[in-house]
Length: 331
Image (cartoon, rainbow, N blue to C red; front, top):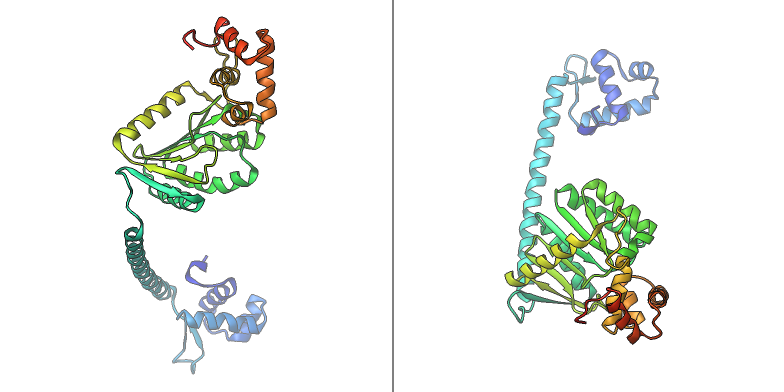
């Protein structure tokens, strides 16, 4: 009960016994509490350090418990002094941190173009994302064109997600349909939903992107090597376009818990994406990356589609896809 004041269980028991039996000595207190005398003396030492026990003037200096109304006031006053000192240290630390941040900002090279900040290497990307995460006030929108998460990455993400959602930040994330086959990722997104996070999926995503408060976007320089570098965009026109892109994809995406509907022609969203990507002339390897699946899976889907329309080549598949209504005629 009194642990918040710095009393352990033994010291508190000794203090209460002294209040109830003010004339008991060490031996008497030990007998009452069924404790060794050494433990009673240790409790008395703790009480003396906290000024809850004082030498008695009337009993030749024997320890005497300070009345609780006085003792508790003394302890609370001490805690208030400690809090005030801690607050002063925090303010001094905040001022020192502000000076260091300002000095570092002066050392950083100026952006070559207004509204564009270059980040080189994974360390700079992580540092910038950490700063944005601390500063976010209302919303985070994310395109995550990867496959399923690993248990390790999920464990690392949970504390950050919990902090953001606990602060009332709106989090919307669009994954690829392929994550529906990843049990750890599905479990993770279900956990996110219990905290208020929103997750949807689409067959393919145009880019990897994080938009914070509709005012800052982080986009990799190279989608095939996202650790190489990124750009931070803050221009009003650019952000307006990127937010519109997100909202368009979000509106067409399906909640992860729902069954994705088939598109025109009886294709799944993933199959329709393969048809479009084949028509663009992309390789199986590139299609696999876009869908977040293995090359073998992408090749199997493409082969199945060609078989369904009786195509013997990819060129013929494009023609027949138009005839089947899988692609618009102007392609």
